[in-house]
Image (cartoon, rainbow, N blue to C red; front, side, top):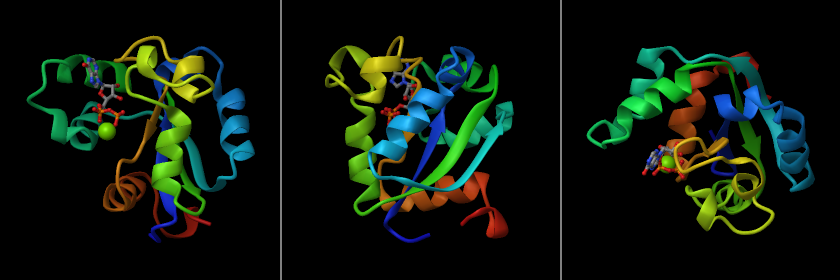
Length: 139
Ligand code: IDP
Ligand code: MG
């Protein structure tokens, strides 16, 4: 995957609350092109693998429960400086610390249930995108 791409998930809380449309509108209005997208649900093994870096953290069990409890929207996004610009658009992990107008400030309930994922590096964007998409499903 090129370095002008990032990977996102609209997490189960955002989908449950009916925020898919509003969040995708904000992503598009911020200049990101959707190059892959699907509604899907992570299995326990998927979530444990995707978040393996956090497996020793006290919140890991809750994180896996949360991320598997319902459907998510997974997507690959393209824009110049995609990884950094998308992290700016979503805001801090904890919505109480997120800047005004960011997706997490607008839609996240808590540090755990924070509405949206954004890759933290070009390498992880490629790994995470490939976790959910391949070949002809990427445009
Ligand atoms: P990020 O999503 O902003 O990159 P990470 O530190 O990579 O944040 O954490 C991954 C996810 O784990 C967060 O988005 C959130 O859902 C959850 N999480 C992170 N820190 C906490 C915490 O202190 N309590 C509960 N859940 C957390
Ligand atoms: Mg992270």
